[in-house]
Length: 570
Image (spheres, rainbow, N blue to C red):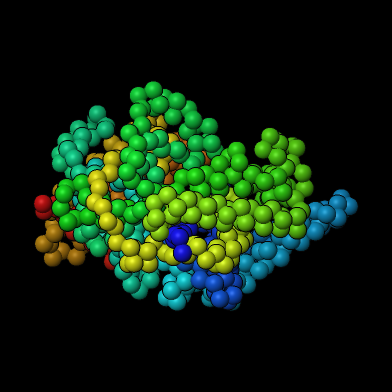
């Protein structure tokens, strides 16, 4: 054997239950379940049935786990699948009238696809997607890792207490759903910050104090490893994975690029090694694995990535009513009007060839590292899970084919990151710079002229939460505790990094701005209710109904406790 390999898949959606349906809201969740999570479960189970253990490192964010476990999602998904089936049947009748036999067949393909998805969800997994993944982990076929509670962007959150709560709730939620403690964590947006004297980036909200390094929070909650982009370990330029997909990010990058300089390359380090990370020189450390950039770009690249193959299903062109897709990518330069009809059976050759190509690439990278260093290295290939199935319809099948091919390769062993860490503890301790996966490797996607206003509200809410937690941590008043727990839940939802990302990419800007405003307003209203209760000794008229409605809307993290936000000791 010459090296190890794992796919790391990061599964995440912001909290959308009771916050819209279509085009922004619950349909995001239904689409991801039908097009990504269920197809991947099917592929993983098929591999296991063939005697192949996928050994994928599979991230499920706490807020996504809460949504997949919600009853409203479960019956909503069935209704969604029924709608897709009926729409495809109507499309089939429509194309029959137009005497387009081929699109009739594609419509039937969609009838079959969503019918099978419904059967899989209801009969195979008993309406419990999380149980399907949990069984795979319990049987040692993959490793599930956790994330921050609501995907808060660690380097920009305004207090150590806020990060501590995100990590703590993330771990507790994982334990509740998967019956064990997580070993690894996907840092939201792969964003890391070492310990240093931090200054608020928002002029209207000035703060300056010594911050803990992200690894210190992971250490505190026994999270042993995390994943970062290549440039944080190796230096050099950080290449963003989304910049080719969103023109607005290119605009932002052109502004940021003028004052940006890449870090010096660190030639003595290797992306094939794991490293113990400490920014304080203490034992409060965690292990970092770096993204293998070249193999990732082979999949992500808008120019030469596999999903751009002309035979694959086009993501953008849809048929209404129903929203089904009947056209193929055709070519990178084809506009929507030039897209040609999709032939489901024609993709098999592309999938087979590209899976062979990728498996060969992985082997060549690992073999080269072994030949040059004599070390058995670890190649880590992280992706957003939704790439496979949602953005790239054929992606789950490609993933399965790659794993099948690697299973017969005697030079490459697929393992989860936790398994690798158990057998290969890091040999070197390092400090890492601040950064993320974004182009240039810094924060401009989440902090820019379009999003700066959001942080002012987040910082004020975080500080208010800690003041109130400190003041009432020993209170025996059940109503005070209830009010503050509801406030804490709203703070976690306010901190989601998705809102800034959606604003910066303009992909659902109005929705994201509204969600920031909604959760901020609720926090302020809850604070007023608390003050009135403390002054009068009773809940004001309508206050209890308001609190119940918010609790019903955002019914997540049932064991959450506002005292998690109490001021941290050194």
